[in-house]
Length: 163
Image 1 (spheres, helix red, strand yellow):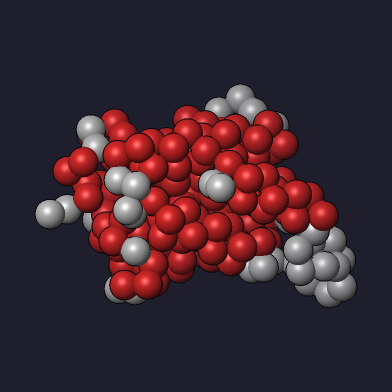
Image 2 (cartoon, one colour):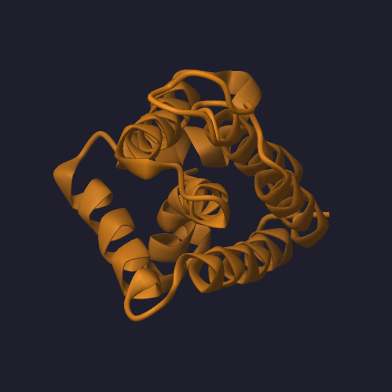
């Protein structure tokens, strides 16, 4: 049985959006310019794609990865993130993304407690992967730090809401 069947259509849309929210939270916490944003977006996508065929990521992460193989699934995720970003400054978007992750994780814990731990680990790993994808600060890709203080704080906030 698919875990998707445990959720309403609207709930499933939120679950599909969750890895993008994890990536967005980190990216918006300390925007790193065009090149850094591209690297971080790519890190989110690669995390989801890898989960599709990785049993260790958990069944729910695999189903999310499967959803991302379709244009419909990607569209649902992108539309949800765009709606969250609308009219917000980066710091506000980061805070809202973390808040939404907490809500979605609570939903998963309530409806599928056996899948929740692996799902939460998947989201934490996605956020960490995004944080390590770009270099913050520096000039033209030289110097800077791998994970900024703002990103470290956002990772801690994500850990807190996913606990």
